[in-house]
Every structure is written in structure tokens, then in C-alpha cells.
Length: 258
Image (tube, rainbow, N blue to C red; front, side, top):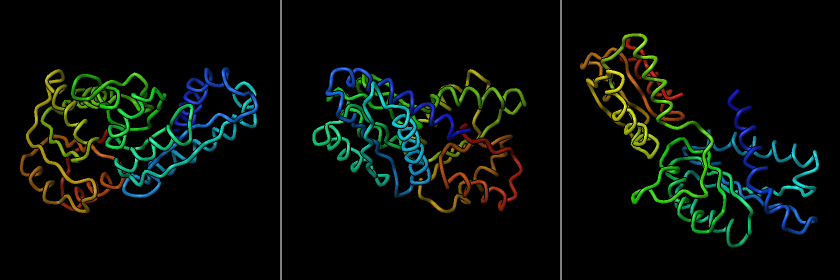
């Protein structure tokens, strides 16, 4: 189901962002789209399937005649899960490859490093990041006139999560969040929206996105006796937390972002 929705979103992004360029350019030339994802590094488990779906959708569109008769040329880049690398590739897409639009990158940190570059260049960029900062403005987070993202807002996920906990009458909660950009974004919304649902925190712990054992944090959480634990992260870290939780004999419900 997740891959299906990614495919639909990518297809909409492709058609929506390039249609104007397609009308104005040489009808024989392909429409160039930059697509950069974490194909290696810590976020590769997310970036690799996203790349495969993007390629699948482009192949489908091309077989159906392309956009206004023009084929799509997908130019792939590997960010290596590195925000600095993502910025370099974004500049290449814009200045060397002359793309009409960009898809990606994968992680919130990468997206924030790319945001200013694509906005200043006026290149529509459809990000596949989880965190909200890429589409939040203000002096601190900057303009996002040309930036969009496919996953739901973090605030939406938190409201759904809290709604479930409230329904189950679980109000004393422990937080366990990753220290990366995605984790910090989630922690911000979790704390901001907690009063609206009568949620109180009995413990707050964090971990590095590449950590391989969260037993110490979970031991502190166990001693705080929460009714439920919220773990805000992505990828392998979530599985590690689940295993450490079971090994530590913690029986409280473990909730993760949807």
C-alpha cells in the first residue's frame, strides 16, 4: 500500500511540475527530472525503494506517450544519506543538467540543506522527507515557495497518535526520539500538542540515529512507569527499540509515527 501511494504521488508530481515546461520547450527533447535519494548510508532502506518506484512510474508515463508527447528522462543521484552531498547534487541538477523539476531527497536533514538552493533557483522540488521543516516558513526555516513533500504532516501524525492514546485512556507517556532532524521535528510537535489531548510526559529520552542499543534509555523509561512509550524515528532504529524493549521486560504499549 505504501509503494502504491508513493507511485501515485510521484506520478502527480511529475505531471504537475513539468507540464508548463513541456509546453514551451522543443517537443522532441526529453523532459529532464532530477531524482536524488539516499541509495547508500543510514537512510538507504527508504531511499532505494523510492528510487525504484520513481523509475517504475516514469517508465509507465513514457510507455503511455510521455508528457504532451515528450518522454521523461530521469537523472538519478545518490545523496549517501548526507545533507552536504544532497546540496551538491541539487546544484548539479539545476546548473549542469538543467532539469525542469526535482524529486527527493530522502531525509529531513537533506531536505533542509537543499531547500534554499531550489527556492532561489525557482525549481519545483517534490521531497519525500518525513519532517515538516521543509514546508515551514519564517526567518528560521526560510521560504518554501517551490518545495512540496509527499508524507503527511508530522502534526497530523501526532494528532492521530494522541487521539488513539486518549481513546485507550493512556495519558502518562514516555518519549523516545531520534536526535536527527526528523526526530527533533517529531519531538517538537509531540510536546506542543500534548496538552490538547491531556497527555503528560513522565520521561523524555533520545538516541542517535545510528545507535545500536537503546537499553539505557529504556531502563530510565521503565523506572518512570509510563502507560505508553512513543518512539519517534525511522528505519532500523525502531526495530532496535522494539527488541530492546522486549529484552528489558517492558510491557507498556510502544507507539511509532504512522
